[in-house]
Structure formats: C-alpha cells, structure tokens
Image 1 (cartoon, rainbow, N blue to C red):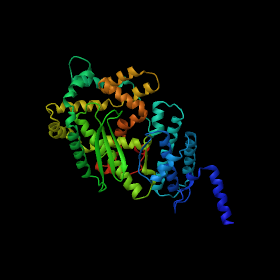
Image 2: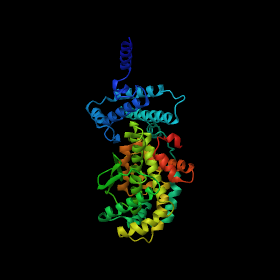
Image 3: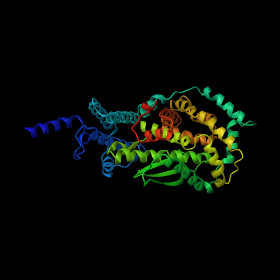
Image 4: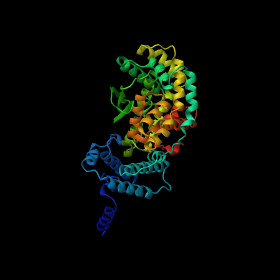
Length: 432
C-alpha cells in the first residue's frame, strides 16, 4: 500500500510539473524543499540562456546541468509555464517559524523567478515602458526626470571650461590631455587594478586562490566586462576602441575587479555555493535583481577604495607618470568628473524616449552627446549599449546611489557594510 500511494503521488505531481522541476534525484534533497526548488531554478535560468545568448552572465555549477540545458531546452512558452510552477512551489514553502536566512532565501528566489518570467515575456514580444521594464527585471523603479533638470549642471560645466565652440567639443578637447596612450594602456591598467586590490584586501578577506586575467579587446558595446569563471577566477576585458582616460583606469579596476564584480562573485561563490551548497548562486542571470546589486556595489566600490581626493592623488602621482601625461590640471579634471556624475541619470529619460519610439536614433545620439558630454562617436557606442541592454543602464548610477545610502546606514565602518552586502542575498527592495 505504501508503495502504491507513493507511486500515485508521484504520478499526480508529474501531471502538474515537469519531473526535473520536482527533484533531481540527489540523495537527501526532498521534493519542494528550497534546495530542490533552487536546482529547478538553475535549470530554468540555464535553459533561458539557450533561448537568449548572453542571458547567463556566469555559471559554475555542475557541468552536466549545463549540458542538459543545452541538449534539451524548453520552448519559451514552456519556460514561462515553468517559471509559474516555480513561483507556485515557492509560495507553498512555509515561512512560519523558519529561520530568517531561509525566509530571505525564499524571497530571493521569488524575486529572481519573477524577473526571469518578465524576461521570458519580453522574449515572447511583450512591450513594457522603460520604468516598468526596469522594475520587472531589476526590482526597483527609476525616476525619469525631464532633461531640463540637468541643464543647470551643464551650465556649471560651461563655467568650468569656458571658451568658444560647443560644450561637448570643449570637454573632449580638455580630456584629450588625459588619454592613456595605447602602448601604455596595459601598464597603466595593471597598476590601477593592483592598487584597487591592495586597498580592498586590507578590509575584505578573499579566497586564497582568487585571481584574474586582463586583456584588451575591441568592437564591444561596453567599456569593460568581467566574465566570472568560478573557483574564484575572473577574465576581465577592457574595450580599447575609444580613448581611455586615467580616471577610467581606476574606475574599471575597481568596478570590474576590486571591490567590484570579481570580489562580489568570489564572495557569493564561497559564502553560498561552497560553504552552504545553495546552488541558486552558481548561476548569474544578467537581467535580474542580482545585477542591480552587482553594478551598484561595483560603482560604489570606486568611491570606497578611493575616498575623497585619493583617486585624484593616485592618478597624479602614479598613473600620470606611467602614462607619460602632464598632471598639472588634475584637480580641474576631478571637478569635471564630479559634474559628469551628476548628469548620469539623464540617459534614463533619453533611453525611455528612444526605446518607446518617441525620438529617433540620430536625435538620441545628439541628446546623449549633450547630456553625457561625449563626442558623437562615443555617444553612438552608448546607444549601441542601450540597444543591447535597454533598462539595464539603471543599475549603474541609481544602483551606486542606493548601495551607497544603504552601506552608510549600516555604521561608520563602510567596508564592513560593503562586505555584508557582497556576501548576502540582499535584494534591491531591501536596500531602498
């Protein structure tokens, strides 16, 4: 009788949910435990990655799971059904009396399955407004301000760099003095990343085997990318298509490396995958709340590693000589960078108009050039990024500001707050 009832229960469950959504056959993993649901979640994300190249930003779980997803991925409609089934299973997990860590784990999985479902609907042709899309994918809603909001900042830039000609041209001409010569770029980047790492390891304990490789590439829509490989290793690529300024060497070193993406992924791997066996953290879906925390903390990490004037001092004393540049106007360059940072969210409004079809491509490039103070070719590259990643752009400026506010609320030891965030399943909604 016991065997009959067990078989009946399994048959009923199979009618509602794909068998590999219920259990993986691993010993000790009960159906519909968070561990079992987490394995189904990994399968879902890997299969979405088969339907959208680039969706899976990193994966370092069992190779056979990836092979299975590649061999037999569900269709997009089937994946939408699979996401709905996962949501139902997560909602059925009891939370009363559960440990806070388990409650947060369930909440984290729910948020990421919801984002996956939204991405699948987009792949099916559903259209969303910019703010709706950002909220559905990344778990936070950006404010879209009129472009006129940023005109006073442009006026401050104009006062900083007075003279004839268009403001963007003046900015480009001024910054041309700080372009790292291509033949010195590797040396300068190596020095910047080494300093970012030196400052980070003074505060955050990293896995003993952590390491990365650095290479220069071209023809990319981004300026830098971290490919996390698992086992505490990253491949960092820097796009050398356009001029790279000395401050960008620091920005990229911190953002892609320390205490940015490399550190974030290494700590997640150690804390969750290796120490706890929580397999959901072995896969990183690009269009998910995870990216808001990843990009926001990577950008805030620049300020954390080089607070106040320390970035300017390091540029002037170390990077300028390595690049063979004149450091005489380094302070003015820092003032310009601070003003450009205040312009960062203008592109949300620009992207909203462009993606909704209200403004054409050439006018959008002109707007980006005006409000990001970038030459038209660089603005066109940025539009290429928006074409590819759409509302993902909110994760940088808004992400940085939200992460900074949260970390600084945790107490005076900002590095401790940062380490807590980088080793957690904290969601954007928990930060705001």
